[in-house]
Length: 308
Image (cartoon, rainbow, N blue to C red; front, side, top):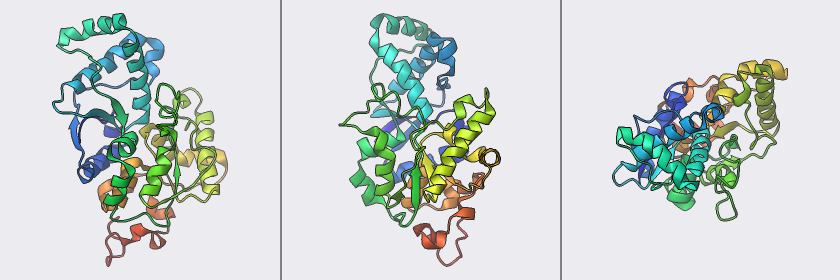
């Protein structure tokens, strides 16, 4: 499968372990990544609040670049916030030929045109809808037996359901759980799995943002999760990077590792934890998970787990 690949800003800045782990995982899934290195930020919904036409033009430019990738089956991202922002722009562009022509008029100065040719899907959707869960299971070399994983979707990949194509035929708001199970892990249900991480308000009300993150992390801990997994690097920033501050406001120790989706997939496919950048997290998975009782203990067998 060949995809026009949009890694997003955060995965190449604050969370390079996400971008790096996706590069390691893709060949194991027979996914060819053609990176859209000239693409710009989606605006994360913020630009659209101030200048909708600018946001739509920027995203239409990215779509047009993706359409130039010869032989690409689709456009893929690894950020659910990008998925939401791009989906919102695409909905407006596709709804009005007049508006689309207006935006393309701007893009024509750069010899670009958005033609509605490629679907845009988050890596999570690609795993379920393009690769297929049975295919994924067959590729697992190290089932995540005894690893209890709490899914954390984030806002932009579950709401609004109509725009995101969530329905009975495509229950995309359940896909994280399905992938965890396909990898051999145990899905942990908890109250915050489909709620906002708090990141969108962190610059306006940091205390409220961190309390929100702390509540979700605490709920997952109380549900006996070993870790969380998310398809959104912005959620990762609030849940992992800000976790020490969230602990203070929560008034309790959390110690909850938060994995990027490609990292979790990579572990099950047999990749070394160090190659997936797990040591770069603020909450180191090795510090709070008893890996001797999980399949990941098999990494670097005979060397005491030095793969970390």
